[in-house]
Image (cartoon, rainbow over all chains, first blue to last red):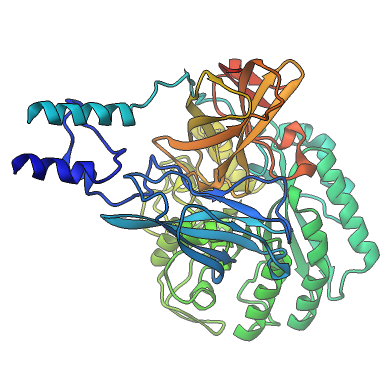
Length: 130
Length: 467
């Protein structure tokens, strides 16, 4: 019974969290929600030589800490920070194709990473649509 | 039980093991780097009189100041008087040519338009100017809101266009005129309560989303002068129709927080008003600022995240900084200052594969960078160069950093790439194809030995083998 209690929480999740210097697993690592705090890699629009109306833009989801569910992301694409132009949930990636109303505006996105322990949201830097 | 936990821990260690960096880099804490869009600015000439900007003589001009400045700054602020009429096509063409001249010299500029029109005329003028600014945003470091009153400085004594409706109309027209990726600077704090719905400063999310609150910074016209910086900070009450609920100290605290995310620039001031406008001209031994915090440029420069200041005004301040031994520090630390800390990457990759480059870096300057620049990894083998870019933008890195930020570049190696050993270089180029000249590339504050001035890139000293 003791073995079951110890093993189940660890084995049930993919873990990429912190390991103590002694090699002992910290119990908190398997229950921590995802985090966009440093040293996470922040999400952003994949580089393109230019961002233009009609040309699809691809989101790079970055690398959150604490084992987010690979298909557990939700997002909102924002025009100038306040108009939601596309959204989705339970995705592992997404693209957005700017429309004429986006021309000369800023497109950013918010991204929420989730796992069984919780979620965390961050903002990806905007790009200018030409 | 112990065997099981040890086994699991071993798996975890394998999963999370972090490779040692392929290279670590030495910071350069002394060199003044005249990087694009930061530091001291020259304030002379106009878009109407491009020769008057005097760019070819900037080195001599800087050396000839009462307090000589070296190395030569690479930033201008142009004041453009536009009267009350909509600029003609010929005028816009002249301005466009002037921007081309500025670009050809490898420098950047801020712009402030000064109008004598009514509010409605200013709105029309801004609409007419918009396309010219968009076409030249690659060399625009910032735009000061301008337009209204003497010098476009929105002084409260301005007689016309002085109610909330008119002021708001002009502000919105200018905000629409300025390219959405170019910072705005505004001379007053109190109208923000009305325009941005309260006293909460802009956040990093506002900056990254690109909303108006996250684009609108500060143009302090009397920085380091008096406890209110000569009316930059005001008082609780109704000011030209705007409701102001913040004291000068509260406004200064607002600016301290806001300027982490929006641009702060301007000039110091030589006000002759006596003790009431005491000038804090020293490095760090002056009286307190509007918040009651220690004054002087070494304190207030980083506190208010200063990006740029007028190189020739006010002379008292520059002389004070030289006498106090901090002039070079001011020259060096205004704006952004990036340094690479280390790089980790695989030593080999197959053609058609992806190599991940993890670069730890930081911005130790007083302020953030504000353009949409990214980190560029260049893989070089003879005449072949593979370019890859981070999805992270460098403006995401907070200023005055005391620790690294991880910037990742996932580099897809084309299937047809020649096999062999590729030298790894790091570069911070302009985000615009029209300003790829070396002068528009950011040089890092790292040991000079790694700097390749011919190609404006930093040699990591590592290699990637493509199989």
